[in-house]
Image 1 (cartoon, helix red, strand yellow):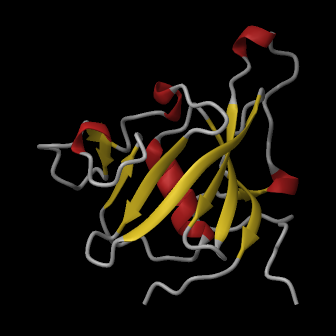
Image 2 (cartoon, helix red, strand yellow; image 1 turned 180 degrees about the vertical axis):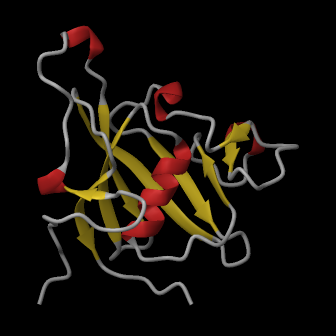
Length: 163
């Protein structure tokens, strides 16, 4: 039996939306106002990954919430994104809002994905829970010229247990 799940229903308290219910931007808007969305492959190990579609106008904390909810983790620890794909490199670190900003660039609730001008093939790292140090590799696998109002879980393979 396959672990691959393609979703078609809404889940979660944070408004994470699955593929079939993804609300798109109004098609009547001019092409200049259409915002881009990223399709990200978020992996933790070789047999566990999620494909997440998220608008570039969303913050890193919104991506954090989508990842945590997609793998059914409790959101009870600090997190960081390392946008240069080098773990613990403070020069490109963005930290959870309740973390210590002394060495990081900014808090994840203040930084939108659009800041990084990501393109297909770009990679970065997400770390959740500095004690257990859950490391997620993230790669941009597609860019879509449409808005995504809420993050969308496009594909889910494998499972991990937090505790």
